[in-house]
Image 1 (cartoon, rainbow, N blue to C red):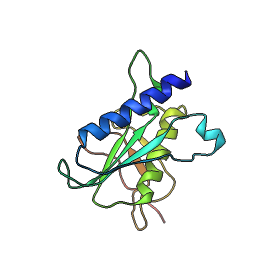
Image 2 (image 1 turned 90 degrees about the vertical axis):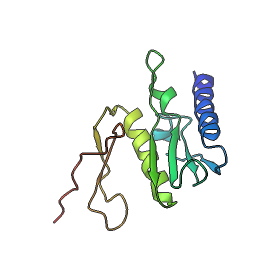
Image 3 (image 1 turned 120 degrees about the vertical axis):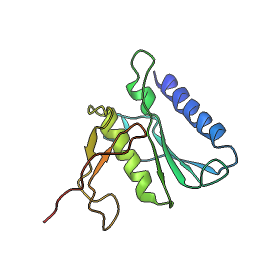
Image 4 (image 1 turned 135 degrees about the horizontal axis):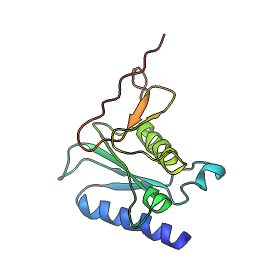
Length: 142
């Protein structure tokens, strides 16, 4: 099973590199820690720099599909941002672990992250949408 997972993560990475030809792509092997690593063994977050296809940064998981695939179907996650920030790599790893660790995310589902997305933000949930935007509301804090 490990070889299948690795080959799936490699296939995702190969696809991202081909799709974003002309962009710099860095594969970040995210250290989830030993217990969490077992949930998404081959997780890496691909960080795609702005380039000819898009003028924003893209953050893409590679490893979720193999960890959760059923009947040949699985999910990876993509997020775009106007800046490069290690925080977005952290958020993608959190999302991957949550999804693969027994809380599968469907359309418009949200995931509590327990803190603001970025410093100063009122948003403390992440969500999965299908190009429709997230309908989650910002957390109300006192």
